[in-house]
Length: 296
Image (cartoon, rainbow, N blue to C red; front, top):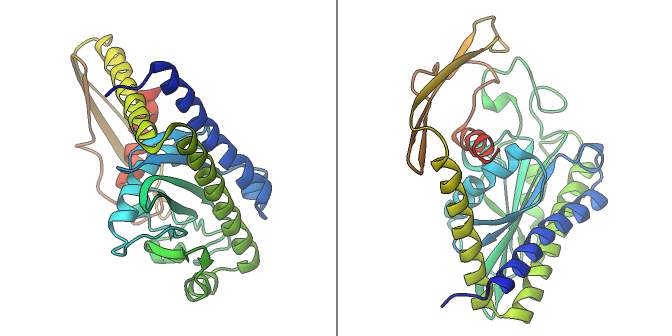
C-alpha cells in the first residue's frame, strides 16, 4: 500500500529536520570546542531495518560511514535492546572512522517494538593513546592511538552504566570533558527519538515505515537516473599519499570505475597494501569516500 506523496514529502522534511535539530542539541550541550565550535559531529535517523533514512548536512566522512557503523555496531552487540538503551563504540573496523569518532546509537521503541534508530558520531578531542589529542602522526599500530571501545550498552533503561563509563574514562586524559560530550550525544539522540515518536503519533508507525521506504526508493531512482547520464565504460586513475607518517615511502592509491547503464562499480585493486603508519583507511571510510563523490 503506497503512501500519499504529500505525506511522504512532509515526513521527509520532518526526518531531515529531526537530524538537524539533533545537531543543534549536540552543539549547544557539548563541553569541548571540537564539537561546540568546530562542529565535528554528525546526526542521523535510521529505519527499523538499519538503513539510513535521513541525515543532517554535517561531516561527509561521518555520514557516509554511518550506515556501516550502525549495522555493524548493532550486529556485534550480542545483547537484546530495550527501551532506554544506547550503544557506544569507536572501534574503526566497526564504526568506519578513526578512534576519536565515538558513535552512539539509540533504538526507538513504540508499543514494545523498535520502529527506528537515532544515531550520532562526534570527534572527541582525546581518547587516550601515546599523544594528547589521540592523533599521533608517528603511530605504527592502532593501540598507540587510543582506547578501543567495542559496541557496549553505555546506557541501559535510561541509566548510564557506571562500570562502562569508568573503563572508558580511565583511559582518557580529560574524563570530565569527555563525559560532558557523551551526555551531549545522549541528549541529541533523545531529541531525535522525541521527534520520531511525534511523527508516529501523527501518522502511525506503519505510515512512517512506508514513507521511509518511499524516500529510499526515490533516492535510488534518482541515483540510477544520474548514473544513466554518464558515458558507459571503464575509467581509472591513481595518485599517491606522500608518506606514511613513519617513513618517506609513497603510498599508491589506484581506483577503477565501471559505468554500465544505471550501475556504477568502484574497484581499488592495485592500491598499496596496509602500511605501518596512521594513513590507512578502514572499509567504512572507503565506502564513505565513494558515497560522497557519487552523491556530488
